[in-house]
Each structure stands twice: as C-alpha cells, then as structure tokens.
Amino acid sequence: MVLIANNIRGAIWVVGAAAVATVMSAGVHELAGSIHSAQTVFIRGVAGSLIIFALAIPRSGFRFRTARLKLHLIRGFVGVIAINLGFYSIMILPLATVTALFFTTPLFVTAFSIPLLGEKVGLRRASASVLGFLGAMFVIGYLPEPFSIRWLAPIFASIAFALTLILGKKLSTTENAGTIVLYFAIILAIGSLPPAILVWESPTMHEWVLLIMIAAMSSLRNYMDVRGYALGEAQFVAPFLYTRMIFMIIVGYFVFSEVPTLSAMGGACVIILSTLYITYRELARGKTSVSRI
Image 1 (tube, helix red, strand yellow):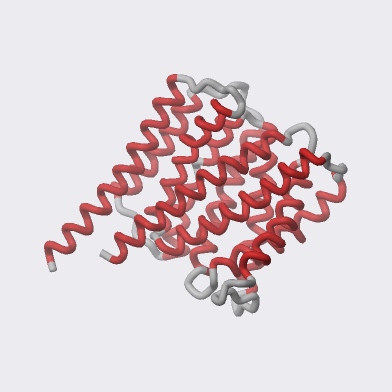
Image 2 (tube, rainbow, N blue to C red):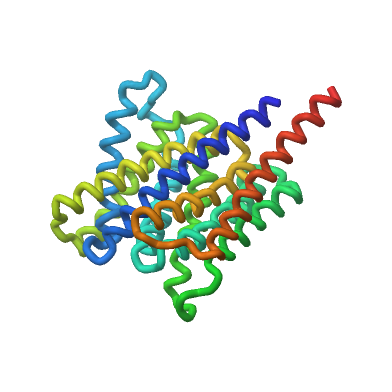
C-alpha cells in the first residue's frame, strides 16, 4: 500500500508540474520574435540558480556538496539539449501542436525506465500511456504544414527531457531535491552561455518580467518533476504529463484567444480517461494485494 500511496502522491506532483510548465510555455511563446530561445535559456539558468539558491539555503536538508557530480553533469548536459530544443520548438511551432509532440516524453520515460531503472512495465499501464499519446495526436487533428526538419526539434527535446527525468530519479535516491535542481540550473546556465552571447539583445522591462517568470516557473517545474519521480514509479507517473494539454487549452483560450476545436476537446477527454484508468488500476492492484495478505 505504501507504493500505491507514493505513486498517487508522485502523480499529484507531476500534474502540478504540468500546470507550471503551461505557464512557462505561454511566456516563452509570448517572447517569440523578440528574444532568441538561446538567450531565454541562459537567463532561465542564471535566474533559476539564484531563485533556487535563495530558497534552498534556509532548508536544513539542503546540501551543496555531492558525491555524484558526474551524474549531475550528465543530467545537466542532457538538460541543456532538452531545454534549448524545447524553447526553440515553442517559439517556432504552433503552441498546441508542439505541446502535443512533447507528449512523446512519457513513452520515452516508459522505455528508458526498463534498462536504466529496472522497472517492469505492465501491459495495461503501457497501453494507457500509448492511449494518452494518441489522445494528444487527436488534439492536433492534422499537421498545419508539410513535414519539415523543424518537427524533429520537439521529438528530440522529448527524448532528452525523458532522460533528465530518469536521471533525476536515480539522483533522488541519495540527493536532496533542491540540490538536484540547483546543479541542473547552474550547468544549464554555463552550457547555454556561448550560444546566448552570439544572439544577445537587451530585453525591455516587459521582456525582463517574462524572462524572470519563465525562470521561476521552469525551476519550480523541475523541482516538482524531481519530487514526483522520486515518490512514484517512473512509468506510472509519466502519463500524467498529458494533463498539460488540458491546461494548455485553458491558457490558449483565456490568454491567446484560441478557441479549442472539437478534436482538441475530444483529445483532452481521452487524455483524462487514460490517466484516470491508470489510477484506477493502481488502486485496484493495491486492494488485491491487501486482500491476499
């Protein structure tokens, strides 16, 4: 029963991360055409480091020293790739479409959790994960333009982001969540500095507000993801990332005046049903285990 409870708690953290990620994506999308994605990523890393450092220091469980620096560096390097490709995708592609393409992440998490974490993926949970992805594809309905190399950016971003989630779970066995997020932000800032210098432009006051908001939301999202994957099994909590599409539809309507289509609403329903089914199966499995004791 402890595992079941931790899975549910982990899922709640991941849903919260999806909501925060939606706010972050809206900010990045708003900056499209004015601030280059590489500069946005660098400022996210610097501001995020300062925010996390200020919040982590007062916590008694926070430790800056680590015995797993190599794994932090690997995760940070993969994160530089993931966030640069992710921010670039959000700026150049339609928001709803790129969000749906990001939903390949849970599939990659499920795949990576087998060799890297040694988790066993049941047929029902794997099927529910695929069903959620199909719901995201139903939201798109069709590609708004012929296929181009740009469509590969969010796919590779999803692969890299899935690896950061898996590596974050491995680190969480010995590392404090604040330590994991702080190292990630510092490495992100250092790794993103060279391309940011090449495209640097002085932001306006409005753009600075958006950039700081993006940094705060991105850091919070990273922290919530780490907590969620530390508590629950990776292949259980991963499909709950799909709730981000629901949040994106809401933000798109109220912020960007985008009226959701019937395909978007239908896909959102499929996403909700898939995550609820996973929860139901997990609870049912827990009851069965108790009845056998």
